[in-house]
Image: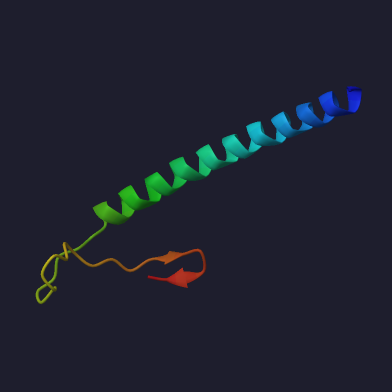
Length: 63
């Protein structure tokens, strides 16, 4: 019974940390996409439905 309680506490601890890390990543990605939207620049000849153009390096990739 004691082993079950210890395992349960470790699992709860891991879930709390996972929740915290996920929340930080969620907030960070929100700021990234807000910056992406605000950085869009208009240019002539954009396809219909495109609000602008943006060039960025993110996560090792060029967008």
